Length: 112
Length: 111
Image 1 (cartoon, one colour):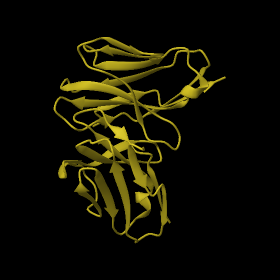
Image 2 (tube, rainbow over the protein chains, first blue to last red):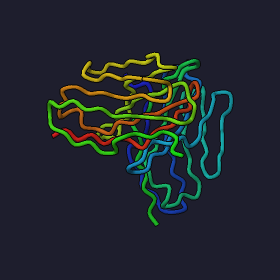
Image 3 (cartoon, each protein chain N blue to C red):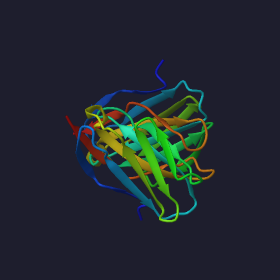
Image 4 (cartoon, chains in turn brown, purple):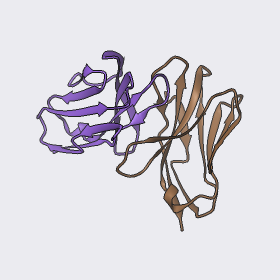
């Protein structure tokens, strides 16, 4: 059973648009929700992360929205740029756990 | 000054061979990981070591054996390579729970 479901699988937006990537989870024991960004030929890198005690977190053009009751969290990229074209992964982790479980990834293409 | 490094970057080999991938981190982290990323980009945890002790051991064929000589190094040895082992293998490290820092990956191709 997939612990975190990510959608869409791929996304194409125009430069300046606001792509939104969604993740849903079932286990209420999860308490850490990061997003990772992976460029072709590179390893994933932490982009932004949120804990369940807040509903939103912003870092630059990247925002996580968190809905605890719906067990969903989303990544929004404001004023998207071609340089944001990458694969984005959500992940979940339990308190006291070293393990991250990743979603299946979303390939984002930002067209000039 | 690379944080998490892996060697080699590319590895092409024949079925049935044995190969190793090396990983080193200079971040002073206690925990290291091996992930497999398949052709569909799915990232799957394989193993994790904390201070040289195995703490995560997912369902992986026993042809795969991790070895941690010290907490800055975690190597992956693969015996009797199969076509299905072709993938990108990532090493990662973390200072504690949650945040993980990934290496650049090793692309393994089994012919």
